Amino acid sequence: MLFAKQSNNPPFKIAITTESPTVVAESDVSIKVSLTNTSNQDVNEGVMYKDGINLDSTLRSDVRNEHGKLVPKRTYPHEELRTGSVIFRTIRAGQTLTQEQRVSSLYDMRKPGKYTIQVWKRNPDYDIKSNIVTVTVTPNGKDPARKSGEVRYQ
Image 1 (cartoon, helix red, strand yellow):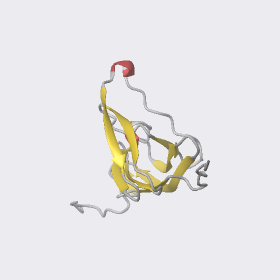
Image 2: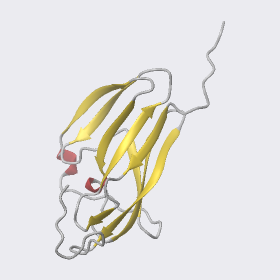
Image 3: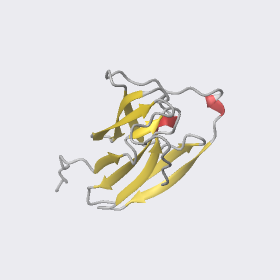
């Protein structure tokens, strides 16, 4: 009888990026998460999205301030009453799924400062971690990349 030997390689690779490394205080902080299935098998999973937060429930975030301290999670009234939906998806072998995660909907990043963000995915055999990105939150009206009177269109 032959037994399949489990590979020492994680089945996923996670890479994150930010479209804007500088945002103005009180603005949303979003990242793009690219989840690549590095295994030779398709992966089926159910993902819960809570209404108003819309974060992939299979991913966890580690958000820290410039002093290395964990940023507190945001609290919402009557969280126990929040509705949501479950989406079933297949990530094919070798496929990369890219999705936006609005990290500031769950973590309090409204104050000016530098924040580091890392995303990880728990797997029965591995904790798969992404790279780390840094986002700078500037005081309202003081975006250093913007000159006085300049209007930026995206």
